[in-house]
Image (cartoon, rainbow, N blue to C red):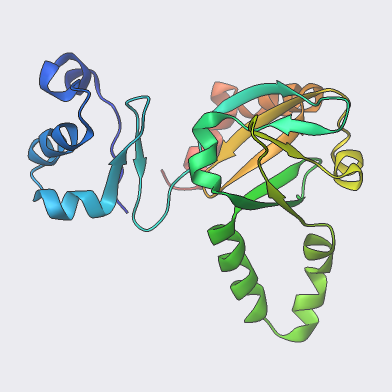
Length: 197
């Protein structure tokens, strides 16, 4: 896997700040010493100027604060809509939150489960039984079914968190506690060491 981070020298050099996406890709391909055609297979430039790793799929990143409306609809951040696509799936998580998968990621998950022995497939039943097939309305909102809202303990404020191949939806108060525990320098160092980074 290849990753490209927006580095200070990349940003300061004016030729990397051009608005034309093709020009920017050509410049970055040159910067990385890659042929342009090969480069475009791995990276794409997103609208805010950051870079997402392609390699066959997009990644979801960032943290966003939104509120449920009185019908249980949630606004999906514009920066995640392209990654999720027109049809996506929301289901239970191992934690007290919900997972959101693009149609492509959901298909990959389904295929992985299909390859399991039947006894193991049964253990995944709650994931599929509570999954909701979702689409966005004209305002960029999607309806989260009541059973999923209850599972995640949603009241009003929801935090949307990008988690690489999926997004998570958290009750904002619950997320605050998770965020505080996970983002201490000590915890980050321990995780990096455990994962051999």
